[in-house]
Length: 181
Length: 457
Image 1 (cartoon, each protein chain N blue to C red):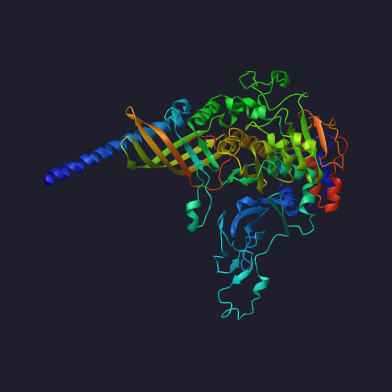
Image 2: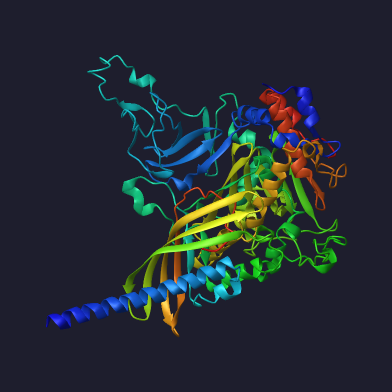
């Protein structure tokens, strides 16, 4: 009996570990595509019904923290369908997008990956990110925040069916957002 | 140290179409701007729909001061300096919200939403009831008024009334938003920082010469196809080539030659408008039928109803009627400017129109906007080169259509003084000319008189 229980627990732990590995491998690959400026490949990681959303954050008192972020249907920094993501990729790869020519040097660090819900075909995954960017001679930007993703299982990997990006900034401390998160 | 009139006169030349580059980085100039421009002018604070309920507030900048714009019990609006009357601490640290009162977190002095001091810890035991609480309320602004829901304030008690300050151009600019319906601000003000001088950000809003190059990558997208300039109207760009020598191909506007109608308003106190007419530009939402409404016919003259360009209410409020958006340029230092975007939608708009307005507001301007991504770096580099000893001796050049702009100024018309021509740099140059007058510290009467446009620009 005890042997069975501990075996089952080990099996569950192993399944967890495998799932964690799959998710983290996916995020590592995604980050590598972004840092290599391979946006055409990167955008293929999103499902056709995806929603890529970065709300506006406001400094609010603790009792009004539920109103800290804008919601879909309100103003945002990113509010993208797959079609709009493809439009952004077309722009950045046009050779005419001066904000990224010379290209920014970026490094995406993805950590604290947590599968918060597993519905079999879809996973709710929270992660933290650090996006470091330098441009030209001395321009330096650091964005830190969290991503709330819906990952859909497909052919041994995932598609990003939803990504909400929550930045740890209210007033955006950069002159633009010409990179992806 | 005040800068002498003679020096100011030399900084801006209407005749040559030149501006001295030092105005973008000289710290003395910046200090004088804070005093003579931002310390006197009517400044935009918010739109009434941002604070609909009693106790609703937003914080807004007025030069280096911060004010709390608060909806009162009787429905009126007050703007209170966000500084405790005791030791000066901010009495509110949230950007926006709803409050029953404002309590300073230093010693607990508490103010009601009208700014009255209503609570002082130890008033009896420590102050022996000798502190005159009526004398230590939150200080209000010198004057506050609204125009069609847009809330403005000034720190100068001698400033003329708001409607008079706005003049025909300022009122027309605001009416171009107000006439689009029962307008409300969509929740969420985009705010970001560009390391540039605020005047580069203002200069650019009149600039219909730059989109074809600066925003070439966006203009090439299907999304902007409805703004493409017909082949026959495109400007000649022979000689424009990239570093590897490739000739650029222009997909289209918004830019055209002399055969394209542009309208410019140049008005008192430095207010101006520049851009295409509705015949060549309706913007990305693809409809400007509001211009034919009864409301628009009452508020706007026939010329203003044709003007689809951008208004600047001096000094820093940009109105973009095609997108239903306004943008505030907030100076934070000679080398730092915050951009605040407010987006409007008619309350009565059907869901699909609302969705279109939102999509355009979220995709065209703002820090991630397909257009605005490219602007910051231009303004940043333009600002920083003015610190170079040799680079700053080169003038800032605004010579397009110089000396050819005939100003039609019918004082009995509701239409502002206007120029009809092709792409031009009149709006920018007029802004700098008025800027020099503001900086001289002259009286309001002198300022009005000196900013009546001449017959030709």
